[in-house]
Each structure stands twice: as structure tokens, then as C-alpha cells.
Length: 305
Image 1 (cartoon, rainbow, N blue to C red):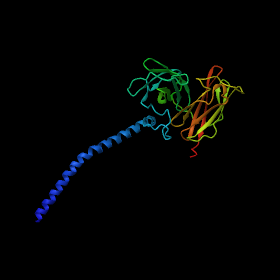
Image 2 (cartoon, one colour):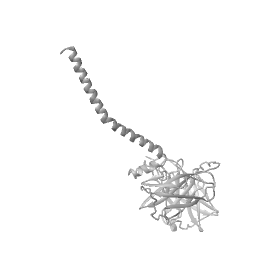
Image 3 (cartoon, rainbow, N blue to C red):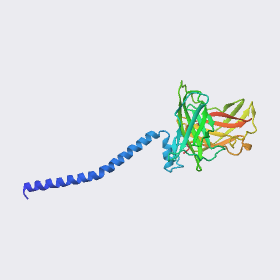
Image 4 (cartoon, rainbow, N blue to C red):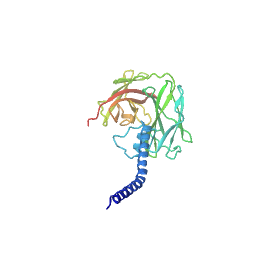
């Protein structure tokens, strides 16, 4: 074969390879674009999810019971439900009106709720420095709008938690509310064995030495004017209620006591802390017709494992 024929054949082969590459590129590039778009979408979702929406994503993924899943209360949406506040800021006032709805995956307001602990909705509000804790029971309008007055006398950022059950599934969704003004955050109180509940009531806690991921027995004894109470009155069908919030992100743990109000001395809870760190505990109990609150700081150590 002459040199010119060899060069011509080589050029033809190169042209064929180039054409094949173009065709292959046309088939592959769309898939690459889809993957890149999916990756960008996931990144956007992760950015938007911090810190809350990741919890909803984990729930929808069907990984209930996964110890790595975020704790309740971090998500504004989860399991196809979404907490939508009427407004994201409130005025500084002793009774600022707060309204919200729980929307389903169809965008419509949910109006059917299960009764848990004698109420269809429990609303917890607390400033992000753990001051101003409130446990409220809002009322629902026929259109699914819940409303309750919140004490926002002190400016700052408040976290609100809607704690409810619908269709037999319990859920806690949370969102932030901004109250304009001179915000001076209080430091997290150091752990102490006793705390005042006002009106001469003093509560003592025995939290043991809790470790992350393990149930820890936490017991409370109550005294009034130095005399230990023999018992308490039922509060929402129980001897007391305990809300634990994790320092940093205010992950929400709502637990209920062991036994009944008749034999609740001390009032005992088994609390499973999801991670090591500082937690603020709010115990609520009823005595002499009034509900009282005592707050404690508890340090949780790393898991034994």
C-alpha cells in the first residue's frame, strides 16, 4: 500500500472514531447533567435543612429507630406534615397572639388530631437562652388555625414546638419566632441539685450519671416551705411532665413519668438523651390547684459504647 493510501486510511479511521465519540457523548452527557442536577438539588436541600429539615428527610426515608437520626423538634416539616406560622416575628408583649397551622402533603390544613395527655395540641415556647419557658394549649378554629397567647416580654429569638398526634402518629415540629428589642442572652445555669418553683416550692433532682443513647432514671422530689410533699395532683393525666432541651440546637425530648399521680413520690422519668452535652430540663407539676415549673441543667456524658 502506498504512503498516500495509508494516510487516507488512517484519516478515515480517525474520522470514524471522532463520529463515534460524538454519538457516545450525546448519549452520556444528559445522564451526567441529571446526576449533577440531582447532586446540586441534594446540596440545596441540605443547606436549607440545617438544622431542621434533615429530621423530616430522615423520617420520610423510613429510618425510624436509627440512632443517628436527629432528635424531634429540629424540623419545621417531617413525615409529610409542615408547621406554618402566620408570622415569623411577634411584638414584645406579655400576651402576643401566635397562630399557626399544620399542613399536609396536599397543602391543606390538618384538622383531625388525636387527644394526647388530655389535649389535641401542646405548644411549648422558650427563648433560645432557655428563659421564658411556657407550656400552652392553643385552640383550633374550624379552618385548622391554632392560636395561643405567648409571653414575649423579653426580646430575642424564641423556639416554639408543636407537639401533637394525628392518624395515630406522634410528632414534634418546631420553628423560630423573632421578638425585636435589646436582646441580652442569659448564660446557661450550672448544674444544681435544687431549683425553686416559686411560692415556697423547692424541687430536688437526682439525675444520676446519664450517658448518651442510654435510658437514665431521673427522679424529682418536691417540698413546700421545707416540708416534703406526700403527692401531687394530676396534671394532664399524669403526675408531671418533663421537657428536656439540648443546648446548642434545642433538640426536644418530651417524656412522661413512671406510675400514676397517686404513687409518684418521687416523680420519676426514664430519659434517653440522644447525645452527650448540656441539657436544660423543665419539670411541671400541679399542687394546690396551680401548675408550677422547675428548671435544671444536666450534663450528659459520652456513651459507654
